[in-house]
Length: 467
Image (cartoon, rainbow, N blue to C red; front, side):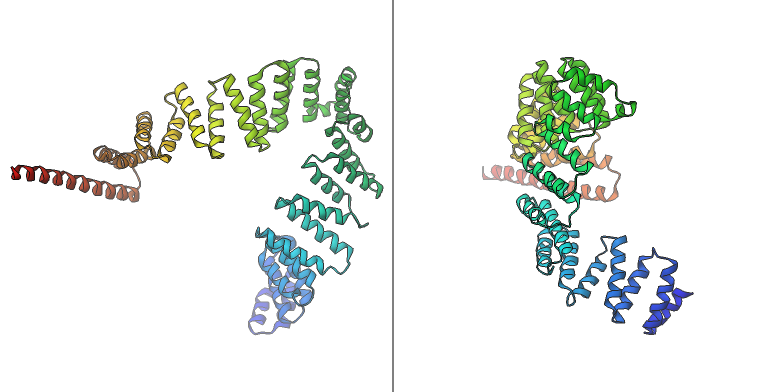
């Protein structure tokens, strides 16, 4: 009854009474976003903007993408608090993926922060994140460097800052950031473990082992330091729960690699890949094993996959080309290489590899489709038709292939063949709308063919009449 009464008061413009009734209803149902919107709306009517702002902020807490709440908060603060106005406008633009506009908004917000340290830090953090999303890493780093001037920081800020340097493998800079965290009182497990990881990545396992409490990381450092047998004893003596960890498998693989037991190393890598599917580390470890074992083909293949996962497309293509030169009958690899060349815009080069697939497997439908598409793109319609004819021969009831073939016949003016294929399409289609469309095209083509025939007869008869 309270909700109906509130709505009635609102309809009668008795806003004070409606407001009280909506509050009673909200107290019973605090998850109702509709009630929060009502309360915010009426609070504005009653000229209680701060109360309205509280309700709209509650909406955002529960639904961060609620655009109405952002718009209302912008309206509330536009003339009251420029900092909050630009923050809410920036958040709205960010959610709408208008990142350049969002950056502009947060820069404006910064100018209205009035030396409030918390506001400045949070705004600069947001700007750093936006610059990171737009690929402007240098500006993101500048924002973090500005934040470092303040004392009211959290260890997460240092970890994020270090991670940004790690993207460019700037290990010394990342280490410097985390050492600064320690001098500011963050001598914590997370900071020390992050330092250990970076020291190890930068090729300093001796320093890494000083910071880590992670037993598996200690073993990895020992392997890197050449303490192979001691590391192996430690690895085999760790508790069973560690043996289910992916890191345990990589360490076993690393030990086997160091001991030249390459088959066993590959077994551990295979086990690791089941736990971490498509991890770049899987391909990197395999590549290293095959390199050491003298298997050039598999080394190039796995370096190619490693770079592909890391989105280093040009390097991946070069590795796959080297692999193909060593082993030319791997159809999956030929397809992968050809598809990568297409995505890189080198369609002519890609066609060579699709041709190689067809030479190995003349009935490969995918290669036929790709080559037909390539021939069409360069205007070689007759060769396109020859591939499509083979495709239709292999799969005579595939209506999509038939429709491609009929278009090919029309391009080379093989109208009789086109009419035959149109009729086959009509027999196969189950869609009434598609049937109608195909029938219209067939009738038009049929009429055109008949008119051409009549025209030819007239010309012939004209020659006889002249004689």
